[in-house]
Image 1 (spheres, rainbow, N blue to C red):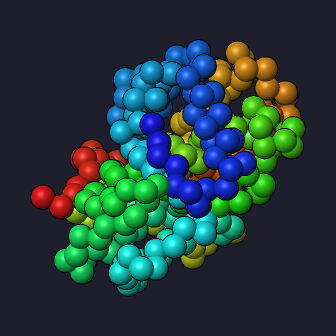
Image 2: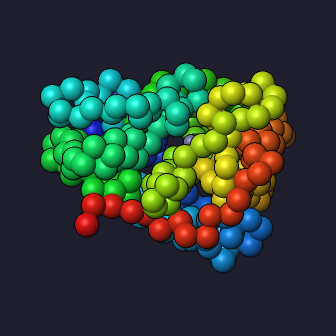
Image 3: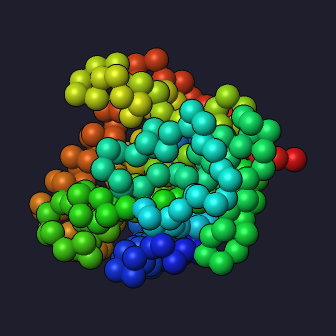
Length: 248
Ligand SMILES: [Zn+2]
């Protein structure tokens, strides 16, 4: 499903590979919030299918854009991040910067020259924060709760592959209240990235039934679900055309 660049540290690559394998063991089915994904139900096969068309490449936080002649202009990768380098959708950032300056950028990733023709190239950047900052319950990064939390972030970033025109990347809106007021960390689409994470984290209670989560892990997942849901802006709208755009 994904090509890992050499800039991803070995320990992070291993954890991430096992996170994906965990999805292959999912045994649950729900229709709750499946429409947020544009799916009729959420289960192992539908989630893997949804993610696999959106996840292409993963690079590490030390990945160098330098030498690729990419100018991000006003596009700040941080608009996708959570403060600490966690994960961002670098492909969407590079695509938008290229489109707005009339250039097709090509990046060297995992030994390939990859033209960033659409956010659907699925280029995500991960950082240490993904493994050491976001944690719930049992603290080992390999514990089930932490794995599910990372998968919720991966699904969030995958949503930034979607949308077209002024909706490209389904970018965040500015939070209007609470501790995140003024930050670009809320959803202006009611089927946006945080809502994707919220829907998955809800389903995690069912996934936990089979995977043996501790009660602390269940509560932690609930807390992150509530946080994700709280990112919905009061004037959010449903984006019905989520098709991705790209260079023709
Ligand atoms: Zn985001």
